[in-house]
Length: 415
Image 1: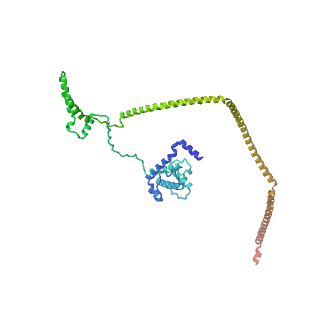
Image 2 (image 1 turned 90 degrees about the horizontal axis):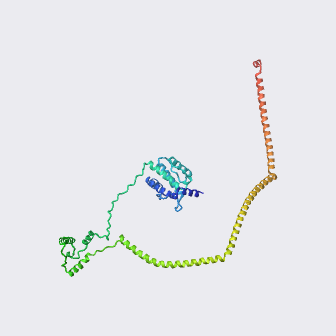
Image 3 (image 1 turned 135 degrees about the horizontal axis):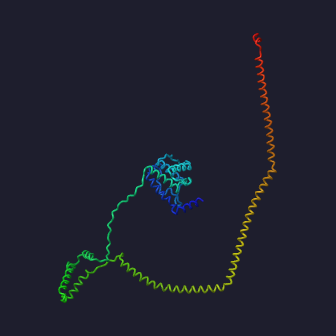
């Protein structure tokens, strides 16, 4: 029943409520470290430091309720003293109920809410144990005027972002840099002077503009021109290094994959068409065979349906009859209980009527009373006799006193 109620509470609070105590336990451990509990508590009792989830209870964690409860009481008493209220440290063999009650009284004095039974703390672990210790640790930190400050993050020097150049994008400056960085395996005469070429081109344009009516004729020998081209051609080649980040390579890969998909689709399409034809033929055969079987077994199907309807009617009648039987059995059990009660009453009355023990007890009481009466009579006689003697003695004393007072004076003087 307790597990059902706990499960209901967890469902109301959310699916993460079962793990909230682990977070509270980690916060509690940080607060205890700020209060220097290792030197103040653990070193004095020769104990090891607490683990991250020491007071958190779980089915997957080993627990020692006696040790955990003792540790809880020690920490609670120390935190209460640190918070400014005197509290005697409990011993190992003290009454746990009284210890828990005293700790909860101090927690209420600090303004903490206690909406759970004290027996929850006797286990030494769980959500409520973490809550009590965390609340007391907060009060101890308040007593020491501790405040949480904003975190100061270290400033890191930003590294210079390296600009990745695209080798596929050819620019004039890059080509010039690559040509400058190439090793000097050839003579300086083999280098192409771009400025000279530009100047020559401009000069030719000026001459062409100045003499547009002349026909340009080449005086260069064709063989020498071919040799010059063959000599310069290796230096004019530009090698483009491939880069996986280039979109052109991605487009080429997409085209290749598309061609591969289309080629494999053609092959697979033929197999799929054949498979579809075979499946359709098989379905037609199954459908025709099913129709044939239904026609052949139509009479049996009707008989089965009628039998099924009869069975349902019989079940309904059985339910009605069983309901009446249960009512009658209930009435029979009530009547049998009443009959048992009546029998017991009759047996008690019969035993009381036939039993002679009460008569014997009455006779014994009468004899005892007679004996007591005789003893009382004797006591009364003794008392009366003593009273009579006392009265006679008093009377004699009175008469003697009277005679002593009535003596004449001359008789006294004669003596």
